Length: 90
Image (cartoon, rainbow, N blue to C red; front, side, top):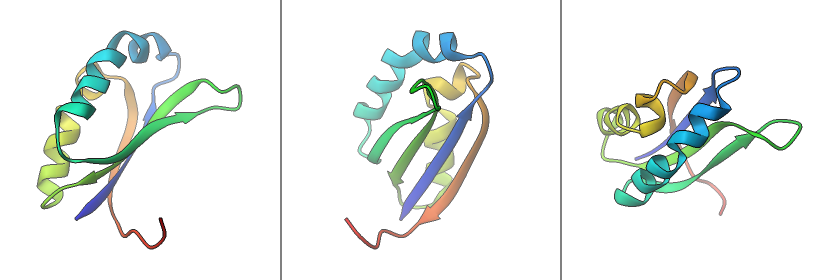
């Protein structure tokens, strides 16, 4: 099942993002669950969140993956949603 993780950073937390970015990228690469991933960007082009599509057996696996993301552990996100996603094109 594909699950879209949409996460929005807390205001003023760019330093938290940058400090934890290497661990986050390593985490993305260390699992077989990441279908695609990338940062959300604001009007100025700065990173302000994350969009990740996970390929997981069930929602519980997506929740576990999200909880163990170094960004989540660092308290970067203001909000996180996990929604089942159906690929139609691409």
